[in-house]
Image 1 (cartoon, helix red, strand yellow):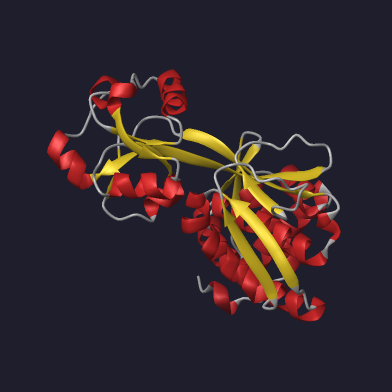
Image 2: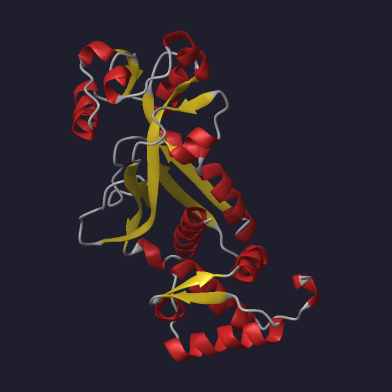
Length: 299
């Protein structure tokens, strides 16, 4: 079917997209701040307009049909375009200016944050953005940064924190290194390889051992407190380390080790001071970062 030839009601499209992503009318209604019957009616109206069924019921949940899966691809493209238009219009109408300092780990600052900042620059071209690449926790109270991207939830009562994504990581090594030492088939074989440490070695071992990887200090003959340096050492064939799947996907010549292992899961939190969040430029950056992390998680 030629989807582009049909005129959509955007409210129907939003209801369909939310239902597809959330898995039910009730969950979509909560996201859209509407009632469940309203969402159901909008999806039904979209089906009638298209002449196809986009969902089928499986027990108490909904599952996309083939037509619904095809439609979802186009609807997400529409949503991306609408979001970019909204960002640009918001930036022009509010004339957001001034500096916003964002702190994140050196790995995220290098590999993931720049692509997100491109969208923010479209929304607010006069904004000045300072990226503070640091693996320690910078103090938001002392204005060492306006927005922090962290993997642990901030506990200070006067900070606004939002869980924006659940990321995953696996063990990786360079293909050139694995060609030399062989590709391990078990955790015991894996523990015979060299590892590249990131930060404190004992702390890294304390992270790996409970996950069933019996490494000791003898496995660690090289490393760095810089995540970027450690990852480059992995890429150059010095050994194995843990890395975010998103970053690994951007790195040629890298292989996932023991691919059937459950991933390491870690949260991504955005935090800012409650007073700073009322500043228009900081609120815009905070909200757009949150949306982009969410979009990457669901894409």
